[in-house]
Image 1 (cartoon, helix red, strand yellow):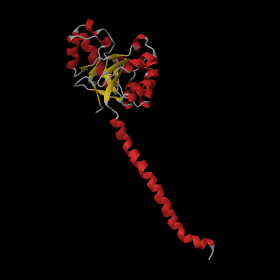
Image 2 (spheres, one colour; image 1 turned 135 degrees about the horizontal axis):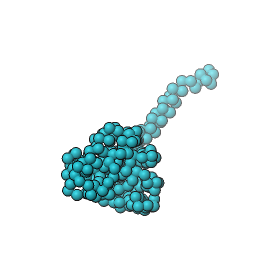
Image 3 (cartoon, one colour; image 1 turned 180 degrees about the vertical axis):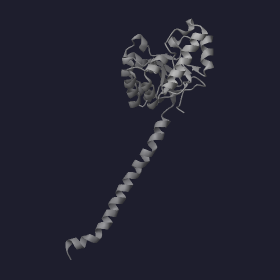
Image 4 (tube, rainbow, N blue to C red; image 1 turned 90 degrees about the vertical axis):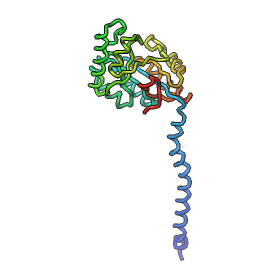
Length: 234
């Protein structure tokens, strides 16, 4: 009998052994992979609200790319005039998983205006955002954070919850990237940080903000219209 003939009956057995060994090695890997998503979810011990005012603009695509590539979602407080002028960017915000909100039409000092003018600023923005494909906003941020009873009542008339912030990044005031990262490091669960769509220093800070949140067990969440606080995305 040839050498080949003598060894051929043993080949199926060897294959079986090899296959069994490979399958055995894959089982722990499969279990690890299956458990990865729940492990990441369990790591979120709290949620914070990342917010960006004054978009959409020419800076919006880079901002959305940075947020998406770092696994972050945010609330975009858009000005109505810019939403009307850049509808494709409003749709891009939604496609990137962001929430679109109302930041008035022309960014005036609302507390210096009469009720009819305040109504126009808010209502036109609702229409502009919806017309651009951003849905009907549920959240409203008054420009400069300036509000009073009249502003609140007009916003409520449109079903809007007024949202301010607990942490100011100061990016509007020329804060450095390091300072913006340090501001984000002060966030605690449920809190909201003010940032801006157009700030190059804020854009540069995003990867470090993402790492800092992860290190502290915090995740970027949505802002609840009911409580005005950051919560897990619904």
